[in-house]
Image (cartoon, rainbow, N blue to C red; front, side, top):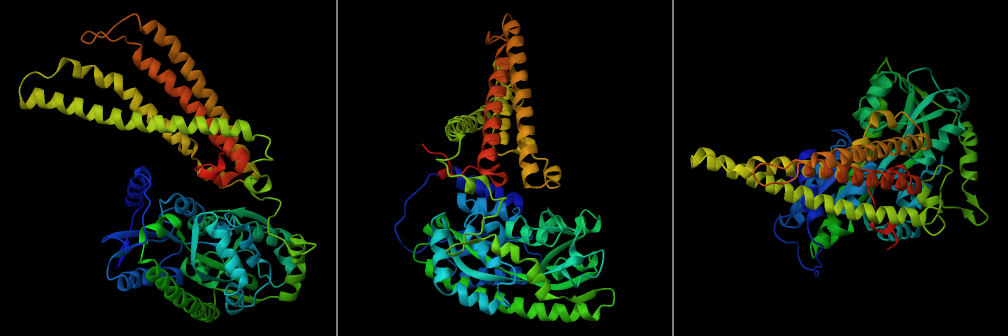
Length: 518
């Protein structure tokens, strides 16, 4: 059964999952009504989209309706990196993700994307079906993720709006959008291009407005997202092959019990369909592009491109062979272990403090929200239903409680980076500059909240002279709430900044359980 899910439904479900206590279950058939969410970033009509729908259908069939898959495509649930974060926390159950984003979890996966390593998908699948694939499965399981299958993201090609490209030198000077994948970035920088990282959902507009000159993707993606409308030059570079890792969280796996094998079988069957559709689609799309006079398809000097990008392979060699493919722009969490990082002690202390504050903020939001609802409902009932004129204290308590409710929400937003979420600015920056800008903005924000807290404290001392007429509470309560809340927001904001400094840009909105040594 397939069910289209919206961002709002997903967030509501995520909140329920995150709020639920952890439970340990024995292996047994999944309970009636078990529902899993599958997220992916492909557009309608893409082989990934069709296969995801088929997977949902097969799961319902093979489990006799005990397991339902809700499919959310086209980046409805965020970027590939965001979906991986949700997968590891249990907020998302299954994802058909991208190799570049997934390599941040298992760096060895990026080796599959070495330039000109595979001529076609069949050869890549032979490798993944052997010891290499088995070892990758172990690496994924170590980070809480279960690979169900390796779908095909195809051989990737270059498109641009500037000129025909047949030789490596003709790429030089272009601005090329790549995913946030060090391997792909290195390939195009070796060709003399400047690389930009833009969310796939925003790529069409970025190409249309000239933010970047070109991009690289499989032909199926170029077709389904209509990128050919804004990039008329298509060069069949075939510079790399990529997988689409089809992943499930171990949290979701535990919920399936005896139905797990049926779900795995459905994933394999859907994977076979996806790979066939991808191969058929490539041939179909290429023939269609050649027939369109407005599009110029160019065969390239592949040997020349291979030589021009040989440095990418060499940079990943070790004396024993190809090393784990970690480039110079790897996340800081990979570059330095927690033991080696000079900010470990400070970062851990601030992060633990922030976690305690976030827990406190959640309780404040929950209980103050309930209190506001109860007091205001009771007052309305007393005044209009019972015609009793209302409760005198109900006029004062909401005024005293509301600041705590608002500040608790701000603390939670700060923890997720939401109060500094100006993604349209960060997307225009490269990785290092992006992290620097984010940290600087957080430091300014933390300083502003500390100043606000200090001023609120000073005003509160003066306001405390007067008291409310009914409950005789000091009028300083609201100001002191602002002062305390501002300090808490500042601490959480600093924790997010330190997290980015220590672990890299992708960790600004999430703290994994293993990142802080207790």
